[in-house]
Image (tube, rainbow, N blue to C red; front, side):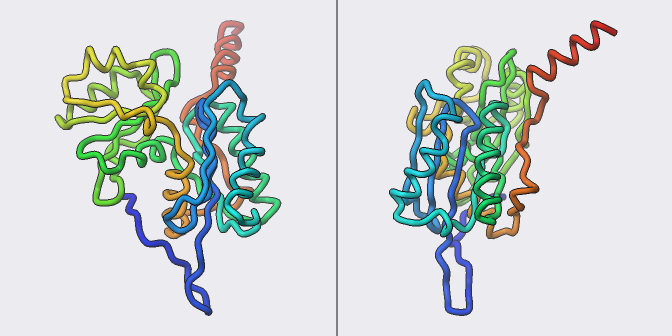
Amino acid sequence: MIQRTFLKQLTEEGSKTMRVLAIDSSGLTATVAVVEDEQTIAEYTVNYKKTHSQTLLPMIEKVVDMSGIELEQIDAIAIAAGPGSFTGLRIGSATAKGIGLALKKPIVSVPTLEGIAYRVSVFDGLICPIMDARRGQVYTGIYKADGDGLTCLSEQKAVDIHDILKELEEYDEKVIFLGDGVEVHRETIENELKNEFVFAPVHLSKQSAAAVAVLGSIYFEQGKAESADEHKPIYLRKSQAEREREERLKNQG
């Protein structure tokens, strides 16, 4: 269970403010946030015709500047670690690692789909984030609200859209869908799913670095941080380029 708690780090003098910089470039949306304890003090999201390599560093600089803090004052860096776009994950990972190595800050890996699901963690039913993985597949998982947090019922994975719909029917509960895969697979969901379901409103449907930051804060408190050297993205499957290369080698053999 992922449970929200009041975040404190005790020092000899008393309580210390916990600041987390969060990055999510796992999909088309690039989003950066700074969270102080449980409060979002700045968030910057871009979802328009620019590559993450162009936008991510300027976004981080702007968010930190608008927060009125120095980057050195960040306690940890939370990163949406995957799955998602291979290029986006590499850019986000490299950015987080670079900052972590330069400032000697720990990194907290947050599963991408968990971060998306956390946006609607007050929903009374099953939460099913879906990201388009192409070729009829989606990156997805199944979550359920539990108090102020989430319980993971089915770990994130890459599957055929029809398979996750069948899995959802086993629970016989109302479902909320969100994520960029909704736009691609809406018709299939509407035609095939037997459960009662809704789609999250647009403003809650995509990635949010603030959600990643809050989860990152919780994981940090639980001792789940890693060094910048240790951090690696979560791909779940091989990239299209790797699969095509293997196919060519197989045909040549």
